[in-house]
Length: 165
Image 1 (cartoon, rainbow, N blue to C red):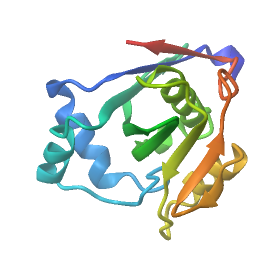
Image 2: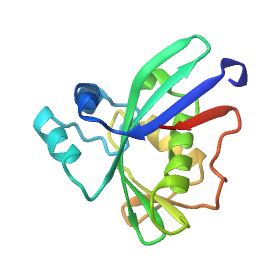
Image 3: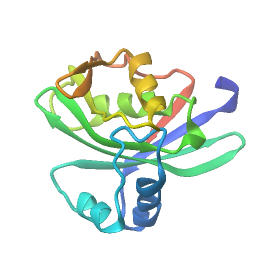
Image 4: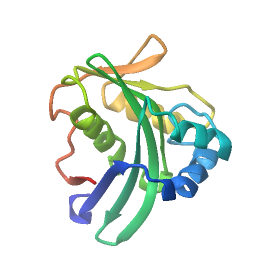
């Protein structure tokens, strides 16, 4: 994967991203961590909630751009980063993009230094790939979420370039 020169661009959502967020919110299955499907009006309500930080994920590599491939809604509960919603296209499955997003949130979400990251996960018949990601990264099921303690930089992926835009 290092030879692919993968770049993960993570940035706050913009109004013009709405169509590209609404599409995966209705179609993503394998890497939809809560398994929820949202219609356009529900996505508009999520995007209008000022209490949560909203990010889009774009990926490109030496072969070209994958475009906007994901959406994440996250917030803080003290020193815990809470990932409320996370959807990622299966086109980037296996490229460690999920891990890069978790590392970005732990290091860049405003608030105290993160000690934990908690991911809302609800199993469905089609999102076992998302559960495998959490288990591989050492998350454990606690209180309806998957939780993992973190230290600065311990989720970083050395062969990906993360660009905070």
